[in-house]
Length: 125
Image (cartoon, rainbow, N blue to C red; front, side, top):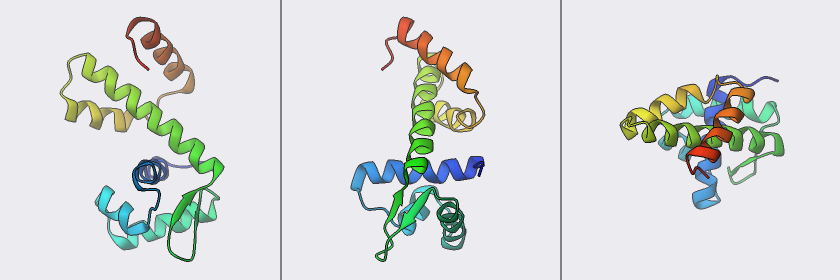
């Protein structure tokens, strides 16, 4: 199942929240993303059915291996692109917003080349 941008965003949000606290519930995703409970509940059902997350009896959301791979890739793209834009002089808020849009459509080839260039010339991680 090919995920849409919104699915990647949900997985990335679960990933970021889990790195902070280790225990993530749907309500935490609602609060972080600013979405309604019904919207998040529907998305969690789709992600669960797609094999990207699991939900235990206490309501804790956990990324599966495939969900974690997508979340980590999306998060890395977001981080690298945001940092690049800020280094170019873009305001942090705008850099983050633009990176959030681009992270979903940039090809793997272009992103890899960009990341390699930044490693060689920009002291990026």
